[in-house]
Structures are given as C-alpha cells and as structure tokens.
Length: 223
Length: 252
Image (cartoon, rainbow over all chains, first blue to last red; front, side, top):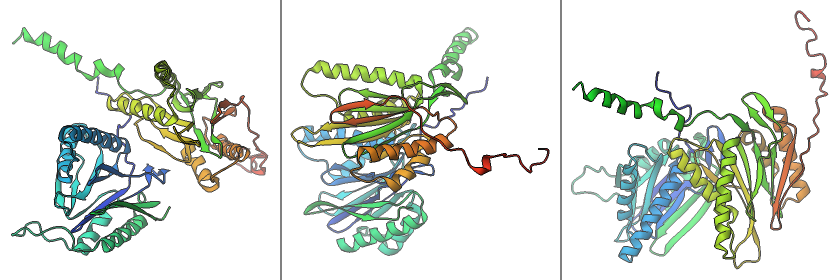
C-alpha cells in the first residue's frame, strides 16, 4: 500500500511586503496591511508589525497563523526575560532569540519572513533580516515578503550599501535623514503595490528614535 | 540477526503510515456552506443557510449552523458539521468553567475567538485539523466604559484569523465580500443590514450549488442573541433565455 499523500497543506501564504531601514539614530519599520489567500483578499486592515520590546519591532509576512504564534512566543519569552533581568531586551538580544526560535522548528518551520528593526544599545538604528528557519544577519536595510524582489533592488540602488567585504568594516546604516528614509519607504511601497497583487490597501510605518516611537499610515492602491 | 527481525518488523508497522492513517486529516463528510456576517449600528448580523451537504447530495436541510455562546457571543460555522458539534462541546466546557469562577465576569467574543484560533492552530500543528471556518461575532461592554464594543472575526481550519467589519466563509468570500465592500458603511440600521445580508445570500443561492433556500439570520446586540425562524428568499427565474432553452439546437 503506497503512502497516502495529504490532500491538505498546513501552510498558506497570506502575502504582503515588509521593509526596515536603519539610520544613524532612528529606525523605520514598514509593512502593508493587506491579508490575502489565493486570489482573494481576506481583509484590508491587518497589521503585520508587532512590538516585541521597547526598542525592537518585528514586521513579518508569510503564513499569518504562524506569524501570530511566533509573535506570541517571543512576547512570552520577553516577559520572562523582564522578570529575570529587570529590564527590556535589547534589539540584538531579541534578534538572537528570534533566530533560535525559528530554528527550533527547523523540521516544521514557521512560514514567516521577518525583518526586525530597532535601536541598539548605543541608540543607533539596527535592522536584522531573516529567512523562515532562522538564518539572520545585521544589515542597514531589508525587504521581505511577496514584494521583496521588487523592493530590494531599488533599496540597493538608492541606499548605496557598502560591500560587507570591505576592511575596515563600513557602517551599513544609511546617512539619510529620518524624513528622507520615510519618503523612500512610501515610494518603494507605492511601486511594489503596482506590480505585486498581494501588496496594497494601506501602508503602516513605525518609526523608532530617541524620542520614542510613532506610527503613521499612507493609503495604497486597493486593486 | 534473525531473532531481531520480527520485533523490528512489528516496530516498523507501528510507525508506518498505515497505522496512523485513522488519526490523520481526512476528507470532510457532511458540510455546511457559506456564513456571511456584518457589523451594524447596534451590533452584528449573521446569516447562514440550513443545508448540510453529503458530497454533492443536499442531504440535510435543517441544520442550525449558528449558535449563541455564553452571554456575549455568536458562532457561525461552515465546513464539517460533526467538527462544529465537537467545537460546541469545547465551548460549552469553556463557558461552564468560566461561569463556575463566579467572579462577575464572562468571556467576551474576543476571548472566544482567541480560544478558537488556538484550538484550530493546535489541531493544524498535529496535522489533524477541524475542517471548519468559524465566524465569531459578539457585543460586550468594555469594563469601566459605558459604551459596548462590537466584535466580528473569522478563523479557518489552518488557524488563520482576523477581524473586520464584515466577513464571509467559503463561497461567501468570493461572492458576498465584493458586495459588502461596495455597500457596507458604518452605522447601518437593522433593516439596511438585513437587506444587505439578504442580497448576499441571494447571490450565493443563485451561484453556489451547495446552497439551500432555507436560511436564518442571527442578530447579536448588547441585549443578547436572537436567531430568526427559518425562511426562504424570493428568487426570479423568468429570464427569456431560460424559456425553451433548446430552441434551435440540433436534434431538438
């Protein structure tokens, strides 16, 4: 008797794009708010950005139920950390935790494509980019999700990222001002919305800097 | 070596796909079709027909696919009916434990939705899903605030969940949501809400082969849940193209 194949998949792709850009003293984390399945839109107002700690915000695209479970898991771990250390987790610490959490399910992965953005212990912007099983690195900017192939090359061109192979190591954070970075994010999402069917509806931008955190929205095409 | 083999053969049978097939996901048997719901001024309206299909046969025509949960919530189910009945047992247990706490608080729709999402996701993780899509609606006063909050959410068999001003399962997602996106607005009156829902259900009746013309509309407000008596929608089939459809065809 041949092995029966499941006529059902435990995964679904709910789409969407996420972007993060690190600056000298700020970090911008952005995501669209569309949630889709197949060729249908489930809802136009779903937030993909989650606050993991005061200085660590995660934006995730992919399979929404896994993303939610991942956010819950990290939130719980953060609570325990705060009880044990009497302080919030730093962004680099959260970055490692996220990587470990993803790899823990290496053989039944969280179908989540994440970017982690925030401020490091020195107050400089930091962005970490991940794949679904926890492989990560610190970068100056990143895009993940269904529109990432459209967004990333444009960011590469505009932010002129220095080669990571250079010695002495060159800082990856962008010299752009906060306002310029936000404008870039808006441009990039407007473009991705034109060609990626899973990106659109509304853009949510979270900005972290020394004064705290703020969120702004921008309407995107709804088709 | 030879003495080891029978034991190893037994072991391999225990872990083989044949042994675990009955615990794994299968195909649904008796299924309900779309559920459609929308928020209106005083609460939430939800509609579902009373059909239970056995494959392509419209076998059962009096299945109530919407049920009140606790004091503040209403659940509507599409998909496998037996799984829906099992979920109702889970929710019974949950609401019973909650009332036994006797602390003056009762689970609201957001909490029930969260519980259901966890249940669905957990079953999905074990590769043994509850073959349903649930719509969870409710109205509850926020503690300390005089105004009551309306809630409407959806959770499907792999755990994907969200809330919105209007939701629909199955075919409703394709046929009813576009109508709702065009015609829904904040602060609909009860009559406007019912008319909008009926418009959606009529389209589903025309175009979804598993729909039956016997439906209920449920209303949940801060006063509680009322589910209407079953009734039928008026349909129109008097198109000239339907008159004498084989006229002019070869052999007619």
